[in-house]
Image 1 (spheres, rainbow, N blue to C red):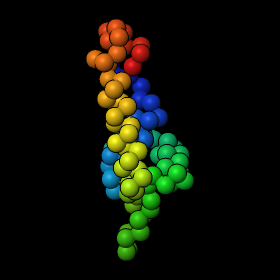
Image 2 (cartoon, rainbow, N blue to C red):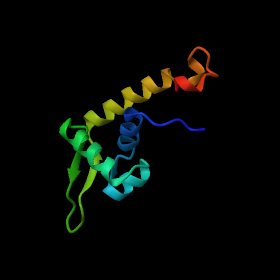
Image 3 (tube, one colour):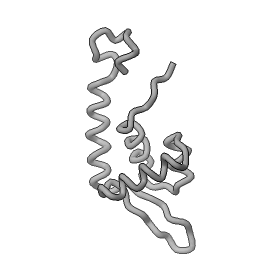
Image 4 (cartoon, one colour):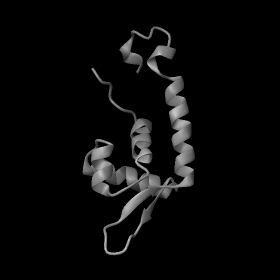
Length: 95
């Protein structure tokens, strides 16, 4: 059974998309519209994504350089915490 994703894992899923519209982010990161709004607001406030306004199109969001740095750090931490690296890796409650 798949574990519930942490906020950090959801943020990483959003940042991995690079550049996308709201619908693509929502489906790509597997979240509701309400969750999407909260994460977009948080990531924009902190400078991890910015809004792109292409001519005659709806807004899209793209990962900034700061966002790419954050994604690299998150992926490093998640790799270090992978189940096979934890003691008693058969205990799914840790992950």
